[in-house]
Image (cartoon, rainbow, N blue to C red; front, side, top):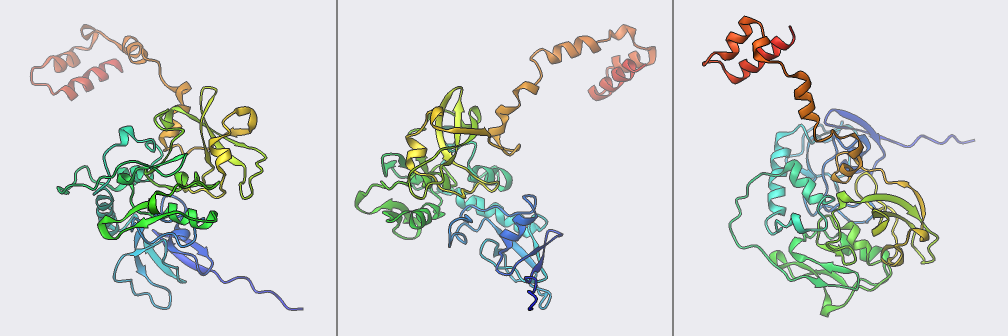
Amino acid sequence: MEQTQAPELFKVTVDGYEVMVPPGTTILQAARAIGSEVSPPAMCYYKPLKASGGKCRACLVKVAAGSAKDPRPMPKLVASCITPVQDGMVVENTINPEVLETRKGIVEFLLINHPLDCPVCDQAGECDLQNFTFEHGLATTRYQEDRRTFDKIDIGPYVQLHMTRCILCYRCVLTADQITDKRVHGVLKRGDSAEIGTYIANAIENDFSGNVIDVCPVGALTDKTFRFKQRVWFTKPVNAHRACQTPGCCGKATLWYRGDEVLRTTARKNEWNEVEEWICNTCRFETKNTSSWVIEGPTQVDSRSVVSSNHYLAGTKSTNYLENFAKENYKDIDDLPREIRTQALSPTAHPDAVQLAIGAGNNT
């Protein structure tokens, strides 16, 4: 009887953390296997979509050692989402100054034509570009030229395109290619004139067109039924499912509530903000009654997300907390020991020293 050999695994080190992964794994996937603390950001890579990645350059990392057989470092930073690992490879992400400095430039490049309309954008609060800019961006910009501008376009009964916000990640194009029978939109023109659009003003009308909204990392593709209705951090996401009859639809979704009203429905996303199972337009746009769904429970939300900020109101302090604290800890200065009182009343005393002196008096 032949013995089956254990599958070969490669040892990869990312920021000092070791992980064993099968051949063919990319650096980004290996880093994700370790955890979010060492995983590079990604604006165009989307695991469920084949051929995604390699366009935004947000995931650039330094390969300090190519492999155990050839430990020489790679001369330039590489895109971790499309670079396969080698046995013994050593990767530097958050600990490499060159990577962090380059990432600032990537953010600046992505924001060249991106408008500063977060206060009015429906994607605010769950925007990958917003998070990327917060973590790696600069507070200022060197760009002085005119920005590209486009008119808003309805590309279907449910989807509106804001090309001004688009970063050309190609996710929506790949989604239409891989989960629908016929794609009618794509990247038109070239260079700095490139844009997402439909040929001769075609409309996206297939049963799964709404999924392009979920995969968009910015607010370029928005849900027309949810526009300007509510901020996401004022809503409550709940997991639910239904027996959908549309072929290819998983029927598993996230319902976003404000009170008893379902404001919108989205496909479920994993910890990397990626949709793993798609839903149809019937589930997304036309089924917003709670009675049509089987409620499973609250959606698990990352504590660092602003969406979770509305989940902790019960533990917040009352508005008169500081006032009551001051009353309970107040001590008249005449009651302080003589040496403390003299130090606190000195005209040359530093404010911090005064506070320390009074605090010392309170402890006596």
